[in-house]
Image (cartoon, rainbow, N blue to C red):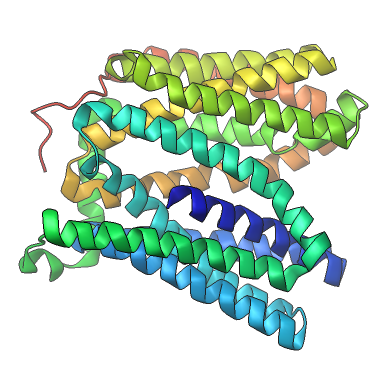
Length: 400
């Protein structure tokens, strides 16, 4: 289900961006579609993810995949019948992005219910590495489909991918109904949504080390977005290279991420979740970003981006598994909603800041600055004992 959803989503993203620019020749229109998608995602994050804790999560998986089938089916039909219409794309992207965000939190929340507790890290690693590799290949596939078949048929491919994901999530839904039906007290469904959201924030703040990890993620993600989004400029300006090397750099990062994701389950990293997060995602990634700024050589770029991908994949699975182990099952939806909100805070604003800084001081200096600040923040968070000693294994004292 994850692999088919990933390929459908990545192909659709590529086709939409390409089609908007090819038809309108306006970077502003591309930006508008991106902003609408981000606003839709953030707008639905907190209220919609309460549903993950209220209702049957298997049914939510089925529903979100079905909604995305309808969205892309409509987009394919309308594009074929009336041509490319920006207003139609914006309207459909709004619904499609909202469904995608609900799918994300539901998907993260449901995985610990499908495997044994000691297999959660391996399950996350297999899923993450698979979706990374499929996503990378689907970017190329999206471009090829546009050239060979056109945008409308590329949207049909996306609809078919989500349809297959819906079929697979239907199997999960019926299996849950027969083997382990999910029951939710009626009194919980009737509670105020605002109260449930506040309850999620209060729980996270009370978990001192885990809360500090969430705060550190905002800083690390911001600095990472400050640089990583502009790799195309780095390759072009700093390395004086073209599209081939840019593709190779992206591929090295994806391969590193896939390998890092798979290795977590073979180590004892979950028991040292705080240290791994600070040292691997903060310090190692920061050092490699600084290296990219100091040594502008193609070989170094390939090796460093492989290392950055590996660090991100490894630390990301450690965080995800720790979250699934430590967050009570009735609150997972709200936690991953809060995580999505914090990711947005650390994401799009960093891209805007990166664009401004690159204009002012140049891309190489921005990579140097990003690397130094990553190391500084890693040192700051390392002195927070609750985060440094955070154990991501399940604990009996975790309560709802």
